Image (cartoon, rainbow, N blue to C red):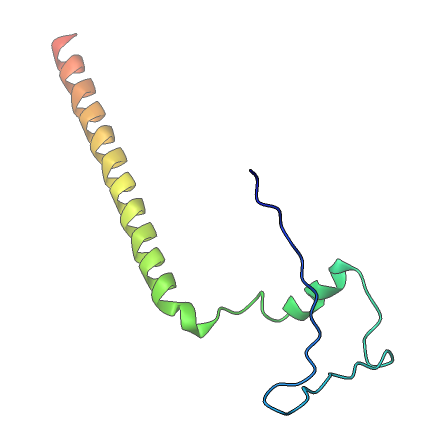
Length: 95
């Protein structure tokens, strides 16, 4: 047997002898609906500056990137050095 979802609609009249307050929403207070592109306007100043709470992450990522660049540079330098030595040996053997 498959369990069926049941919906129960309840209206709260009283909690501990006190009636709950109903929020009043006035239609003139709600802003007119705008397109999604309007939300990007508030990001205008935030795109150019980094949030100071994330500085440990940026430091860690910066150290990681510098380490990777140094490693790749050393590997390419070593390969270039081996290639140059190999060429010199070949030139010394062949007249």
